Amino acid sequence: MGRLLTYPRGCLKLPLATRVWLVVLGLANGLVPLFFLGHTEAVVIFLMFLASVGSMMALAARFGFTRLAHVGRVWWGLLIVYLWSRMGGHPAVEPFGAWMRAVIVLDALSLIFAAVSLMRWVRGARGEVV
Image (cartoon, rainbow, N blue to C red; front, side, top):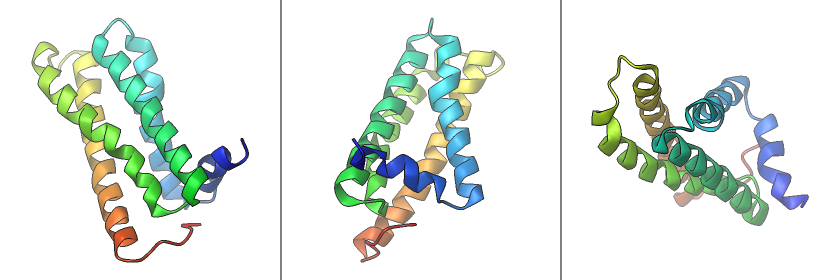
């Protein structure tokens, strides 16, 4: 069990701006969906959040707190495609539609950051991040 905590413990050692970013992602993907559980999309967002965090924790437990853990964000790529296909039924002027679009933007930015970090891992930056 201690190895599974590698990811959460590593996150606590990250720079403040990175920790704030992770909190924003966690709120958007892990907390806000609980207020919209009547919508299938909210359930999918929450489940993808759990899959992503679980994957990153498992990768960190196996390989340490390295850039490789970003592979766990692949779930968010799938989520963005799914949400994009469902936007038409939820206008941006409604709270649910606005939140859905915010999740798409936040998760897309997170995927860009993850891709950059993974490229660094591929090019040899394989040590512990913190």
